[in-house]
Amino acid sequence: MIWIVLGIVALILVWYVVTYNSFVSLNVKCDEAYSTMDIYLKKRYDLIPNLVETVKGYAKHESVTLENVVAARGMAVNARTPEEKAAAEGTLSGALSRLMAISESYPELKANTNFLDLQNQLKTMESEIANSRKYYNGVVKSYNIKCQSIPSSIVASLAHFQTRPLFEITDQAERANVKVQF
Image (cartoon, rainbow, N blue to C red):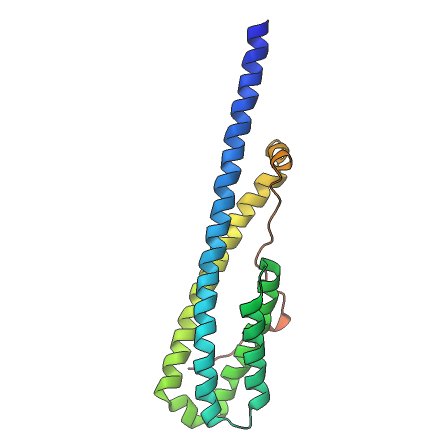
């Protein structure tokens, strides 16, 4: 009888360790996915001042739009949590789409090779950011399901693993289709 009890305890202990290790693995993947997304976001942040300066030379009276882009970039750079970062990114994306719309009014700007190069870099960067958001949200989804599913939720509760936020678009302007012509 004692061997049966010891066997059950051993099975429970093995299950706990395996489940705990899977949480650790998913947690690290979530951190890695967020870090990768953050790298692409920082690359975009680095492009924005060059883009703003290029537009400034052609569209001097569009200062409010340019200031909004710079302010939105500052908020995004200083955001720390995933929730803050998602909100700031929505605002920044909206400001960037308005900046790109300005170029339609300035044929000389649209023909500027530096501006065209920056637009292409930004377009590529936006694609990379979208892919990294998908990966991050996919990993977080798996982690959150494990945190909330029985019986792994027992381990999550005991080991203080908590669900993580998805990187969601909160700005309605970013949800709308944006027409950007190159």
